[in-house]
Image (cartoon, rainbow, N blue to C red; front, side, top):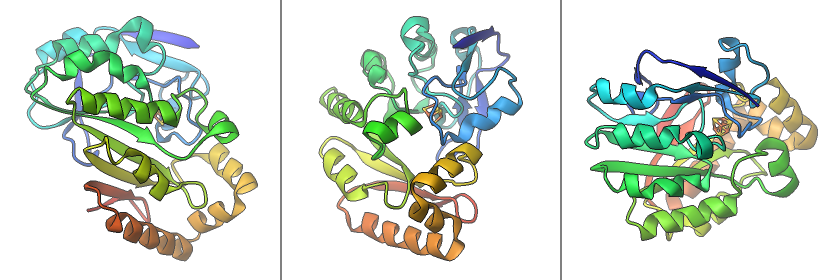
Length: 264
Ligand code: SF4
C-alpha cells in the first residue's frame, strides 16, 4: 500500500452531494478497494497506481478544520472511507472530529465498524448522523467486489451499538443491483436499529470498465437490465414501489438513469 502524505490548503470543499453543502476528505484513495467504487476517477489526478493501492493522507487536516468556518451541512467523505484500515494507526479522522466545531451538522458514511471507536466524539456533536453502507455482497462475491471492508454482519452489529449509544444512524443500501441485492432482507435485518435509510441504484457508467465486465461475465441478466434503458427504468420503478411499502423512514433514493436524481 502506497501512503502519500501531503499538506492540504483547505479542510472543506463545496459539494453537490445530495443533502450536503460541504465535503471533508482527510484521505483521498481507499484501501477498501471496492471494484465498483465511483471515486476511482481520482486516479486521473493522482498518478499512484490502481484504485485501492494508494492513499493520500492530508496530514494537516486536523489543524485546518479549526481554521475554516462553514455554514450548512458537511459530508464526510466522498473520495475515501474515513474509517479505512490505516485510520487505526493514523487516527486522522478521529483528530479531525476532535477539532471540528461541534455545531457543524455532520453526516458520516463508512463501510467499517472501526467507526464505533469514535462514539465518544459523536456524542459531542449537536447534530450528527453516522451511516454505514450495507448490501448483499457476501462470501466469494464480497471477496471479489468489496474485498477489504467490514462484513455486512459487522456493519449491522455497528448499527446496534450506535443505537444503544444514542447516536443517530442510517443505512445506505448501495449499490442496488438486480438479482444481487435483496432489499427486503436488508431492511428486515436493520430496521430495528436504524433511524433512516438512503438507497442507491448502481451507477453502471461510474462503476468502471472492470466492474462492468465482471458483472457481464458473472451476472449477465443483471447487466442486461442495467444496460437497457427500458429494463432499467422498469426495475427502478419496481424497487422504488417495494421500498415505499416498507415501514421505514426513507430520506432519499438515488437513481442514475439517465443522471443522478433523488427520489423521496
Ligand atoms: S469504501 Fe467507498 S470510497 Fe472506499 S473503495 Fe469502497 S466505495 Fe470507494
